[in-house]
Image (cartoon, one colour):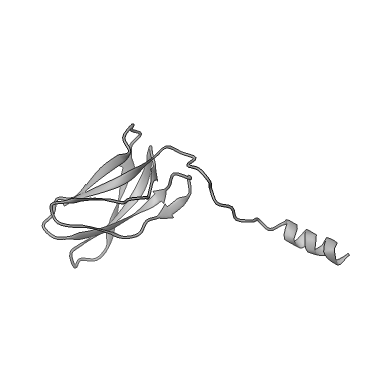
Length: 110
């Protein structure tokens, strides 16, 4: 009887699983800094597993570009590009990730 009760209680719980392969077409994001100071950025959106996720923070020096390596974002969707210019506070803007045959999409900050 105890086993039956435990089974009834546990039977309703979802067991988390991890995705084993990409489920949607995705790209890596490159951010180019057209400004004159170093900027920090991170991305939030749907990843290659179609899960809502965010990335670590990356640095992009003035006049250069940086790619968010090993993080992939769903094509034909929008992401939040969070960024911080120099000592200023964090802000963000919505960016469209186009459907493309490329493996990267580039966004520009000034």
